[in-house]
Image (cartoon, rainbow, N blue to C red; front, side):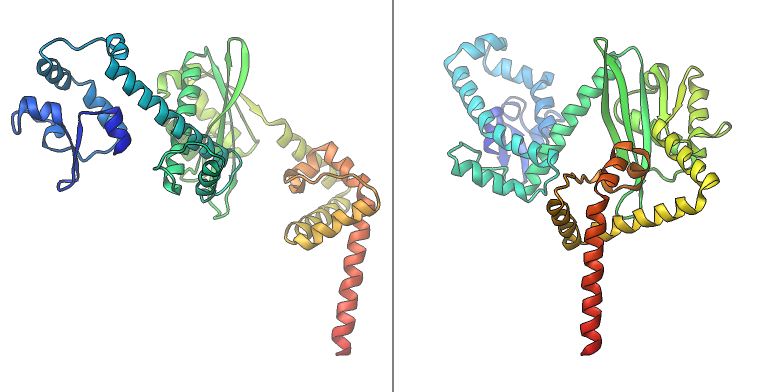
Length: 374
């Protein structure tokens, strides 16, 4: 409440009622003369409630009458001694909160746990930075992250509203719990420059075309993009080639085209390349395809689930002087099949893979031998 009293000096907190009261309105109108929650006691502690009351006609009228003059202009208030003192307090408090907001942004961007927030605040204090005495817990970090996300999303939505047209790409995958998560990216032009922005990730009711159509509508409407803008400016959609997406009669694309016949649908090139590769190998060399898939999936899980095996592979590459960089995406089957660059990495580093696997087999055989002898 200390920050609230600095920003809104007319607020009084009633401990007994656990509510906020506007001292100016309560003094001017009196209890029971006006239906106003800030007179009887407001239990909505959101910042928006304070801001709404501060600009309300009843509050402005009470301030004007109590001061026996019209409300002073913002320039006059800022130029007064009290105004300068208040601005100094706001500036100091802003600088204290700024480092905390940046810490919360770092945690979200680097995908760190919220528990790191408290440690970062302690580190800032050890470096001599002036930090706020409140907002030092994990819940405060989550609040900062949500505020940053809301601000960034409002900028994206405003850019979409100002753009002459836009398109979106959509794809889904299962999370750790097995629920389907649909991701939507939106593409538009700003000052003639194309821009791609993340819009939403959420779980639809199901992956059928009807539920996906409702999900897309819900995402745009929930993002404050009304149906008139959403259906009028949307000119393109990119997705995979599944029947629930590109079905000619009842797919998501056909349902969206019923709202906007000018909508152009694009089958994702990477998904098409993957399907083409599978079709070619299954027709001309099905056995080879099955063997390659078995080997690659086996290598994937052999190293993904064992830190020891992964370190052994890295040591084998270092010994053979082979420079290979393993990325998180490099282990995915789709990337292995569709990315020529990663295929080259696998071929060039094959000697290292073979050496490490042979060493693992030898160690396994030795362990079995000693176990049998015992």
